[in-house]
Length: 233
Length: 349
Image 1 (cartoon, chains in turn orange, blue):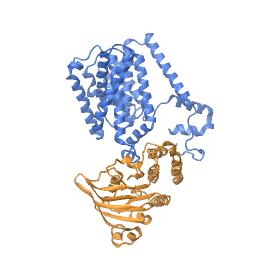
Image 2: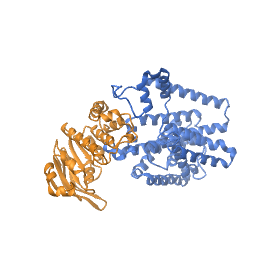
Image 3: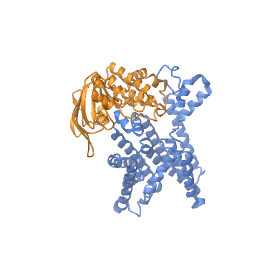
């Protein structure tokens, strides 16, 4: 479904992503794990079109999408939950969700909002509340709900566990699993390698802009070098 | 307010409106007509003298300037400092068009439209490079642009009259013309901000990356908001020319841009009624306090400082006034607790 082929990304003269290639098949959960500064978010932002790649190609459902502006990629069925949630703080929960469906016709939105509320009952309780007054976990749910409003084929999540209490992290990951079961393909970027690998089908390990290992998630969980580097022995 | 009983309402979109849309329009049109009549009466009956009438008309022009700047400052969240520049473009283009055409109502409207389009196009030309920058960089760039416009006007004496000014402009801007254009401007901005485009503009202010991730073409909407703001400033400039009968480049300096910005900030960024009030007070006050001579600027400054200390979000914050909304609230109060849901909706708006 998503095929990233040998991309190179630069921040000015800094070579941030060095020839990274990976694939996501339909129905999978794929995770990119790595330490701070390994280039995880940079890769996501390149795929979604927020950052330009200097070379290499990104193709989604058979179409090359690098060079296409980020706002057009959304309409093609690729949604991103940006790092740090980034909900619209002064809009209500409902308005945030409506913004997520910006690329769709207004007649179709009601059903999707109902779907999101069903999946996140907390959001329904707070639908008239301004998003800035939500807790971190609720904001993460809102950011995910907003991304789902565009009816994506592939959902890209950037560090959904960031700054959340462990119990909330588990909740969020349960939701990700459910979403996947319901048919959404997921590309997950995480620092919390243990959690990410426990729900993923496959994983890629990133180190300073390069993919060093790729394997089935269950194998990575038991891999000695991964254990040492990311899972604390 | 934070705890909304959700189980009470089965529908996701319960209708908060008690008054239907046609009735809302009717109420507003009647209110506008009444205001217009009162305005005409107090001027024709000589209740306010000519000085105050001129002040009233100036207030109208500055209301258009403030609410139009509020689009790019309040709604879009940028900080342009060249609003007087767009006003100047509209003023000179409009005045020259008026002078070139014969006298008449139709020609007056054509002049205003030409002025708006000219300023809007300049807005697009400036907006495309300027809106790649943010915050103070954008402020400095637009400030520079405003000065360029003024210098160009000074240095084209054959066309613009240069420093001695452009004289003998037809004085079209009477109370009715200005009043109608104030209402039109507010109506255009209001409908724009309630539409899908308005939401897109607001979401850019809230978070640009998230807006882009929602599929909003942020560049397009930034330039669009900026040029609509510029076009309306151009119309205001044209009305200003028709009010003064003469134009001088010195009226479109950097301080004039700041003045308009002060109105928007004082009124509350993102609040139209705030901009209207602040534009009225800050235009009328210095003129009304003439008798205090040079002390009037002290009062003006103290007022600004006090508002910024005690109400940093501006007089009105982001509150927006709705006549029909107020009437609905009153109806709900009279009916009592039976319409709890609707009341909740109002409170949360």
